[in-house]
Amino acid sequence: QNIIDNCPVIRDGEAGYNPPCNCAEEFLTENSNPSGAVCDNDVKRYIVNEPTDVVTTLPRGTCNGPSVITKSWDVDPPFACDDSPIPAPAPTPTVPNPNPTPTPPFPTPTLPAPTPTVPAPTPDDDDNGNECSDSPFEFVFRGEFVNCAWVEGEGFCSNAKLSEMCPFTCGTCDECADSRSRFEFEDPESGRTIVRKCRYVARNDEERCGIPGISDTCRDTCGSC
Image 1 (cartoon, one colour):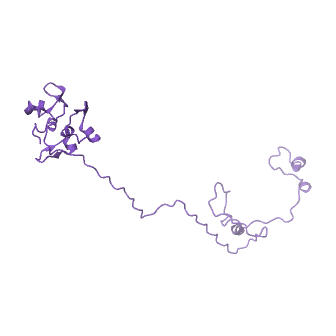
Image 2 (tube, rainbow, N blue to C red; image 1 turned 180 degrees about the vertical axis):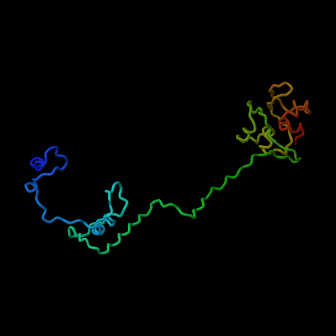
Image 3 (spheres, rainbow, N blue to C red; image 1 turned 120 degrees about the horizontal axis):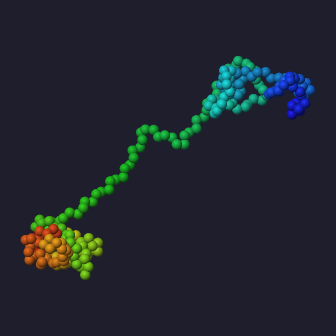
């Protein structure tokens, strides 16, 4: 700041950047031991092992070349501009990859065992070879309408009237009998839903046994057992 304030510029006009002045002896101390130029060999030996005498522009961005050599000399500076061979740079240590990419052969994945498919129940046969199925109708039990799925879920196959309606579920296909329960079905003669017993079917078995589900409910009357 002392030089800027007290050392006048030699030429007139706008000073510009770093104008010439004649105040060197008054404000500056002369260097009696100036250092010489640093040779390319010295740079490669002590600083970074890559050519520097062919660089035409300043480097910019991230450095991708050799690493800077760690300072290990005692004389400051030790530059001699000699032509002795330059030691090869130390190899860069390899850092193991924490997530290595697997290489073949790859392990064979273990697939879960397939879940066995349980076949749906199919109609059973009685001793005479006749197909045996549960009645598809809802029927009256203790004042309420139930079906064979309910009988199976409640475990009521020990009831004789229920096992007559559900011979396949209850395993009573060999017992040839009509159901004694009242059951609900659609009467094709009237088009209405009615509740009847098998004795109603027996009064006109030739026609009424052909109604879908009747032959599975009144097995003895309809000759299906």
